[in-house]
Amino acid sequence: MPRRWLDFLYAHPLLTFVLMVAFFVFFGVTSVNLFVLLKMNIDLFLQYGLMVIADGALEQLFDLVTSAILSILFYLVFKVCERVLVERLTAKKFGASVEAARDAAAR
Image (cartoon, rainbow, N blue to C red):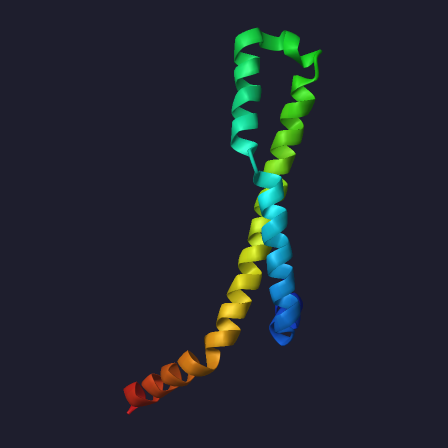
């Protein structure tokens, strides 16, 4: 993710939280029942062979794979927002102790 976007997210914690919640919901919506539908589609291909392509099974398989990719992208954005919020919330508490440990080790 570009550094400029991360800086923006870090500077706006409330917006980052709203985005995190939204992308978590998007992830849930796009991934619900995805594994079951994908398994059923592949079983259909295995059971009936290539004749299911005429019935639209190939298009459905493409839609399911696209939904899986979109779901992964939503999850990644959710994790980025989560990481930014966790670092922002813990930076003062843990950042100070890390700097003190570095100073003590340098002596």
